Image (cartoon, rainbow, N blue to C red; front, side):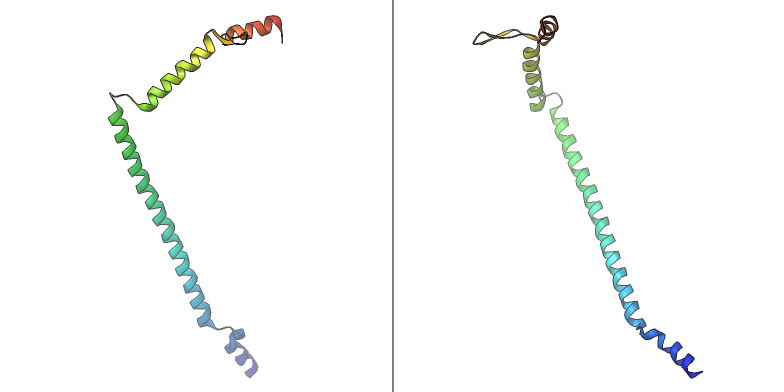
Length: 111
């Protein structure tokens, strides 16, 4: 009978205080990691809001004025439109013709 009592008191040789300290440490590490994750999300939220406000303020300044990007886009669109629809002598007996005309010629004459 003493062997059963002795085996029950031994708990298989495991130290219960070390296990509880390990659980406490892992819980603290998890809480710290979760807290840092939440802090990063909050920082991202604040920075996103800040930069959206700055962008909106910049756009508000451009209303009624000329935007550099808008002017560049309009100029580029005119250049592309001219190349696609216009005629031009390129030199060395080469000519630029509109895309529609070129497609018709390819269909009529073949490659």
